[in-house]
Each structure stands twice: as C-alpha cells, then as structure tokens.
Length: 252
Image 1 (cartoon, rainbow, N blue to C red):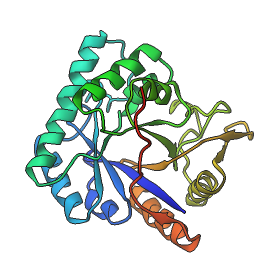
Image 2 (image 1 turned 45 degrees about the vertical axis):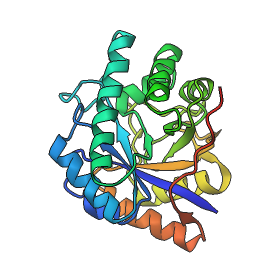
Image 3 (image 1 turned 135 degrees about the vertical axis):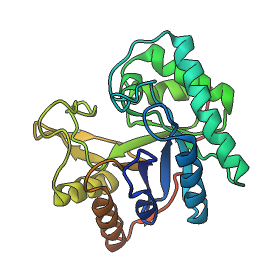
C-alpha cells in the first residue's frame, strides 16, 4: 500500500526544509496569499534535491487574510489569477530542471470550488487549457473533483490529517471550535483511518467516507514538523509506503 503525503509550504513558517524530509509532495504558495518569487525559487530547489513532487498552490488575491476569506470574483478574473500563479511557479520549476507535478487551490479558493460548480469548472478549464495532463488536487468527493473529471483534468482526491470533517465529508469551518485537530494522537488516528479504511470520524461522532489518494498536512500549523515526523513514522510502522500519487487519467 502507498499513500501520498503532501504539505502546503512556502508560507513563511520557517520550517519548510525540515518538513520536506518527511513528505512526498508539496504545494508551493504562489505569492498571492503568502510567499514571494525568491521563496518559491528557494523551496523549488530544496524540493528538487530531495526528489519531492512540486505543485502550485494558487489562491485568491488575499495576503491580508492568508487566502482564507471567501471572495466572489468574476470568473474571468479567477481564471486569469490561477493561470498567472501556476505559470509563475511552472516557469521557476522548469528553469531549475524540474517539472510541475500538480496544482492544488488554496484556502477559500479550494473550499468554495468544492461546493460551487461554476467556480469549480472555471478552475478546471483553466488548468486544462494550461496543460490537460497536469493533475489537480481537490477535496475528496467534492463538486470540484467532479468538475475536474468533466473537464478532462486528472483529479487527485485529498484527505486531511489535521482538519475535522462534517458528516457529509466536507471540512468543518475553521471558525468552529475543534475544526483543527490539536492532539498528535488524534492526527495519527485520522491518517490511519483515511489510509486503511477511507473513513474519518466527523465532528458529530458519525463516520464519513473519504476516498483519499493523498493526505494533506498544513505546513503553517505550530506542530506541523512534529506531526510530519510522527505521521511518516506511523505509516512506516504500519507498512504503508509514502510516495507521490499517480493521478487518474483525465476523461472528457
């Protein structure tokens, strides 16, 4: 058994290179919610040395709120912004002798696309037009995954190590108490359940189905490095290999 372990990096938390030692994929902030061109280049170089898959992490234009404020923008503006950010990182990766492995929207852009079909299709079409073979990560079982498949984009269904779920498989709002998993033992239990059984325990105690091909660990959390080490060690004990995800072929 193999699972991809990804982390959102380049967000100014200072422990990126240490986290790189424990994950198989990263999502690099493209300077709209965090980071800079210089930070993108530095992180790309560090990831290539470690043979970690590199993905673009585009956001709404919202540095003030770390890309986590919901925004209603004209769809042409969303398309342009996604292409701008992905193209910037792709250029840096290619200039360093690598290849961009995937795209994963960030924050509010990610969560809104999971429930808004027009936004989901807008992002999916933008990536398809950029590179129809470039995989995209999205919330497992969401409208965004369906939109990616409908637009012929290879989809990677994502689960979360450190976020609580609603009974319908959506992520609970960060505004709610307990939305972020604070205890390492609970993080490890959720990762193991996602990997072994495709399930997670929702906020109300019910079991929800989560078909996760990759597991995300947020790199901006105070315990991100400790969690990354612990998750990798736990998966090794359980006989689960950690490696980049092979996305499904896009179909249209």
